[in-house]
Image 1 (cartoon, helix red, strand yellow):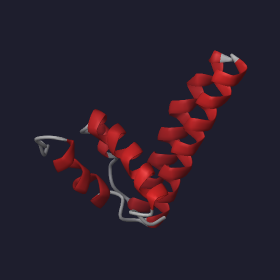
Image 2 (cartoon, one colour):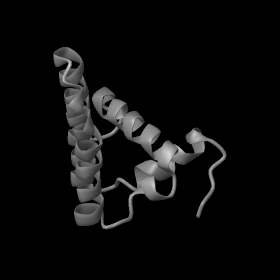
Image 3 (tube, one colour):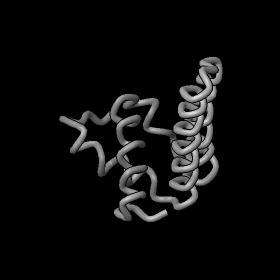
Image 4 (tube, helix red, strand yellow):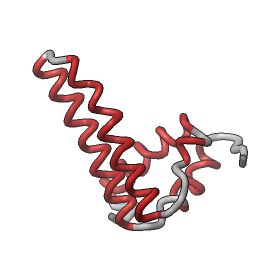
Length: 100
């Protein structure tokens, strides 16, 4: 397993593991669903819905990896950096730095 000194060193690797456009789209959709589920739970007070957040986020992302990217998600090897990478990629997509 490759070790990274910090997140800054990890992020280029993370992006390389998301070269397939459909994989990135599924990550973006999953992250958007996570935000929607959390917003719904907060607005409605229905905390039981929060279990859907990881299912939506990881479900979409893992379909992207296994079906389109054909690689193993970085979550299995680098769970914390991978989670941070997902949100950084989400922001970079919104900023136009990463293509959807």
